[in-house]
Figure 1 (cartoon, rainbow, N blue to C red):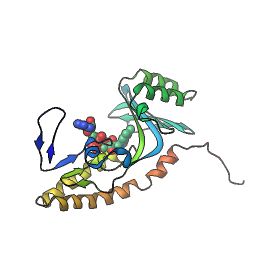
Figure 2 (cartoon, rainbow, N blue to C red; figure 1 turned 90 degrees about the horizontal axis):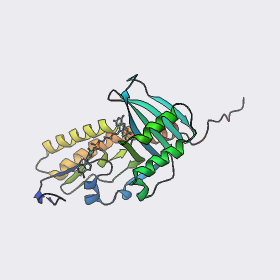
Figure 3 (cartoon, rainbow, N blue to C red; figure 1 turned 180 degrees about the vertical axis):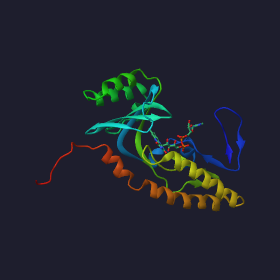
Figure 4 (cartoon, protein in one colour; figure 1 turned 90 degrees about the vertical axis):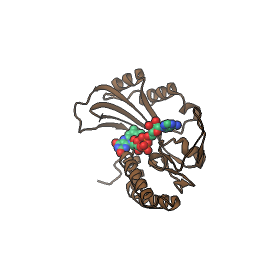
Length: 226
Ligand SMILES: Cc1cc2nc3c(=O)[nH]c(=O)nc-3n(C[C@H](O)[C@H](O)[C@H](O)COP(=O)(O)OP(=O)(O)OC[C@H]3O[C@@H](n4cnc5c(N)ncnc54)[C@H](O)[C@@H]3O)c2cc1C
């Protein structure tokens, strides 16, 4: 494949592997715009590092009320906070504006008790935070010609699908397939996709249920007659 770069000279490659995450540019260039493949699952997530060691590296604390949850979780030995909340889909402009992300989180979580005021204060001053929609990405095929996708670029339910493990296993499966069929890329890519899709199907099963049950829309009701 002949590839041109924003910086650097054009080059020719035998194979292009798109491993550039859920908003993959390789995918956009070869398979078309992200909107064709993404389903918004009705929630956003914002995370930030709390700049302190995790007091318990085995526990996640979760506090929620209808439509919004906040978690304090260990991340590589440090403590992180995650805000996960239901919200109508944001415009493309809002998605590009970190100030709007902060404001939205502040608005959604205002008035929530527990440790939320303290976490919001940290979030507000954080210069390094993550914000994205929780979405499912699904393509009918992961390869085109000499290009192939792996990891979140190929398939993901962002946040809920054991994505890191699956990305690594998928890459190993592709490497094995290329090793066995290096003279025939189409067969190698088919083999990779066949094996790995099946694995993902099992992994993603039930994810939607977890997505909704972890962040209920309504308060818990007891509708059962006593
Ligand atoms: C909040 C959150 C929590 C998660 N928790 C877990 C968990 O506990 N366990 C788990 O297994 N998974 C978890 N995941 C999912 C996991 O992070 C992903 O599935 C995994 O990182 C996918 O790996 P990847 O290599 O495909 O993509 P990424 O990790 O996104 O890596 C893509 C890389 O490509 C780079 N890149 C993108 N565009 C370009 C470009 N144009 N040029 C050069 N480089 C580029 C990016 O900078 C990035 O380094 C979580 C995800 C989120 C959002």
